[in-house]
Amino acid sequence: MKESTGVYTVDTGYLREGFAASHMVVENGKAAFIDVGTTRSADRLLAALADGGLTAADVLYVIVTHIHLDHAGGAGKLMEMFPRARLVVHPKGARHMVNPEKLMAAAVEVYGQQKFDSLYGEVRPIAKERIIEAGDGFQLDFNGRQLLFIDTPGHARHHFCVWDEKSGGVFTGDAFGLAYPQLQLEGKRPFLICTTSPSAFEAEAMVASIERVMEMKPETLYLTHFGPVAADAQSVESLKKLVVDHAALARDKGGDSSLIIEGLTELLQSAYATYLDGVERDIDLATFLRDDLVLNAQGLAIWFARHKS
Image (tube, rainbow, N blue to C red; front, side, top):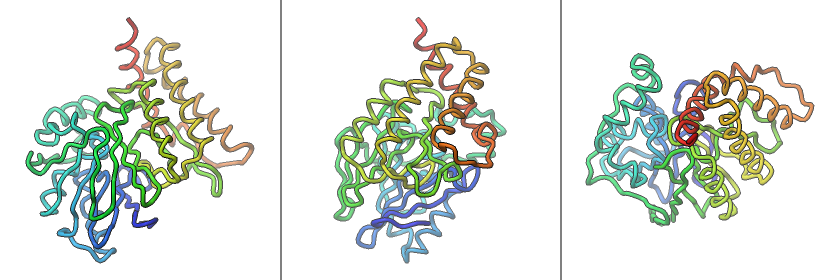
């Protein structure tokens, strides 16, 4: 757990260490969690509270940038554990937090039942009266700390980012993609990879969302995958290019998932080589990103099918 201006990065333990984070924001003795992992992440979040001298009763908000289960799957369990908390969610995702059956069914379609059970376990519903729907421009006074919610479609239609003026940072969910610690060079700008996982990827919307957030001139991007990175202009421009290149690749391969995976592997290997700029790294990028490549290809195939006519 690392602290920056009252922001603590907590590894949720999803898939592997350094893959998915929850960000605990502490203000005047109260806490809010932004993205919370799965039901199996609860103990880690409770431990983070204890490390900060806080209890479950000190949590005022559980905020999910979108309702994909690696971000929001544990929200129902946590709301049962945090008696004073309210859930803050995009208006397009709120009903699925009240009744998660369709959300679970969509994930089972992607992963299969056995893997779903292994990854997520139980997804618990949340009482409607405990939910706050945060539309574009919604402002939340978190114990004296102002949080601004920005509608950011592109990865999902039910996605927002959260601007935190006090830290000069933005909690980005998946809007700014992935920055796995294992791929970063110490002392250098971050290496960002876009995520086009099923099923609502839209390239133009994603680029527009990125540009809109950057208008806030953030110093830090708090990524769910993974942790705080500098809001470096060159890295963001490279990310935007990757988004466009992902869409172009899907068109070029006619929406064929297997061909898209091959193309994405080459595309990301080239982008990473450019980032390393001659620095040697002992990592097999294709193997390390295997799951991301598969999910990105699935999302691109769905996107292509939606737009081919």
